[in-house]
Length: 403
Image 1 (cartoon, rainbow, N blue to C red):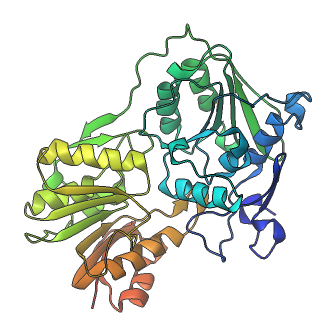
Image 2 (image 1 turned 90 degrees about the vertical axis):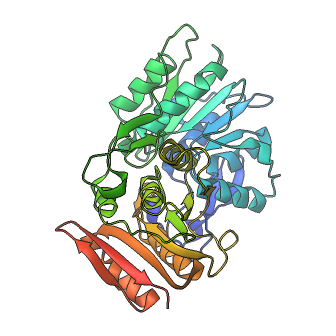
């Protein structure tokens, strides 16, 4: 059975045996029906290597006591929780991943030190003695973070990366080699692999190329020709994706005073287009990615100026702790259908249900999605109505009204 999809009824669905004890781990939001685990073979391989239990370690454990440890890209906190006694700093782009880490540390009876839970936008640690890297899905995010962390490394820093075989490519190794120093890989174990890198302080990797900026095309409505700012790891950071482009051509014009949410905002181009179409609207940009929210703020400010009214929030969908019922007039949404490497509609469903709760009566949810995903079925079930605004062979723009 694929380790990513162990049924929740199995004892191993939440129980993770590590060299430092057995942990009860969860993803976030916590859902007893969740079928996806909070760790995989790559996390396990790395921990076994550090403890000297993996073939790659030749029986020699890595001395972690008293060393300044940074864990980059820890997806659900499995690494930070297993190593909690060594007080590592976790660096994550994911709001959900950070919330899962808090939950998992609490489950393990470990102290939750907020100062050790940093985001990819926070100032990196000044010194790192052990850098552990869970290879992210985004090669751009890895490039950006290695550039940001490189000044904290020294010749004695131990750098170990981990990922599934399908996640580690020649380009991945080339990034480590170009930015940090000589790099090699381990043998594969349970379809996972380790990366070993020796920092070379004399290496000059050149400037960090992120963020990227580009101009939008001329045929997409109010945002035509405007500048987009993309920090590394943001969805389609180097170009405008075709789904968003289709929504931009049909973006509604909000009324003055409307509270408009760009939900799953990415680089913020959809919310920025709505603000350009309806200058009197109040925009709120929401994403679970810290890189995305930073991108959205720069895109918005670049096009509407520093004094334009807007909020920028890193959150899980329309979190009821942040968005009171009936507090929103319009939600614009291009929902993802992946969570890390897994294909799932759970995120879209949370976005849709959160939108219904947050919208005032008469408020609208506008969604763009691949035609084959069948979002109209979910929206009709949830809202009792769904209108096709526009469609082409690949995408549809749908509108649902809160009754």
